[in-house]
Image (cartoon, rainbow, N blue to C red):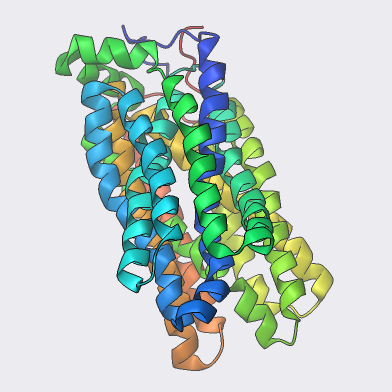
Length: 420
């Protein structure tokens, strides 16, 4: 099978693409760093207001759900008008969310502030910004997306430490107010540096006919069929990973591991994930995006059940590092698949739809782990269901690859070489 002919909208890499990598990396630190912030503020808020931990923890759910829903609108806006304006909205929205929280006194105010954070910052960066980076690159798109995705891992490791220090220094209200100022001071200048890739500008100028041609030349499939395949795969792979991510600490503490060590193991998993994002992106540039997605999904699926099957703490540490590498590789792979197979003209919409299913999978997996435990009294059933979701994901990816082969689309085991 030979490569499909080059599209008239082929990517020519430009130096500013690496500036955009740096900008998006920093924005990812801010946005994804806001997710674990919920955990840091739980105890101060429950002590102050008498809220339950369950009520306070719903702040995380509010961020995730609002990001998933709002991402659909931002994807459409990015495709039609570009990303700079919506990134400016994200910067202001995140800062405003923290400033509003600093004066909160009710759960309603608390939830609304978290919805604002998710519906602006996380929705923009996890959708249009991430898919937009890939359109700056041909040969190095996997590496570029991997670097940007590392920003999320850095933020999840760094921001809880910053938040804790701010709380210890001046209390939770002062900490939230300071975070609001920090986010505004950093986010607005970064937003002003945002540009759309030339290929996306050309796609908007060329209109629908050229955008459809690009989709056909890449995969041989209609754009929305590609989005459907990727959405199904992401729903399943995120279900698999989130069972472990959400329930690793309680799993370990149920076995008698002290909470401090359990959190350290989770942190090791997340830090390994930062490296996994780079590894996954680099492999995608060398093997191809869909084979890399399959390999990383296979690794994640193969590792997840061992957490309930082994007792050795040394093995648990090793499994955490392995899982971190694989699950982060999965995340980079599906983002790179969106860049590879979804045309520039509908890249924002396509990524938003896939991200919606991804957030749905993350939420469902977390629920599945808890429901399985409540039903059986341990985590074996829940982690077996995680394996089942992982296997189903592998089946979906294999069927997707078969559709591409039958359509006469691009080679799967070699990266598509756009014009340099």
